[in-house]
Length: 118
Image (cartoon, rainbow, N blue to C red):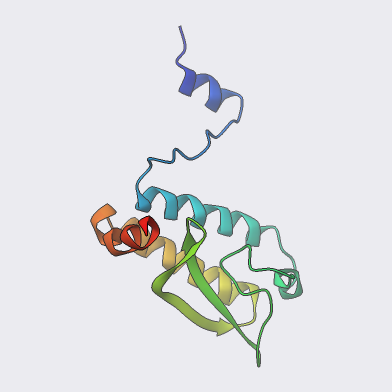
């Protein structure tokens, strides 16, 4: 008898993030979403939008684009940088942020969790 997890995987369903999931898992989930999204773009203008629903700013300023890690609807303190307004530069910093998150544990994000409880 297959488990629910096996059936979900077989049918390509990714379960929704559990609200009790730790901050590291939430950040990794978001990083993967950002990399998947930007991986579908062909031109840097596709990063332009009217709102900041992704980790990259909706507009570039003076040829630079701000990239900020976020989860739970809020920016992560200290995880923000400006890069050249190219898909490669933004994707590069997204990959670096993901590597930082992978090297972390939930304790790394304790201060962020406290901010979100207020």
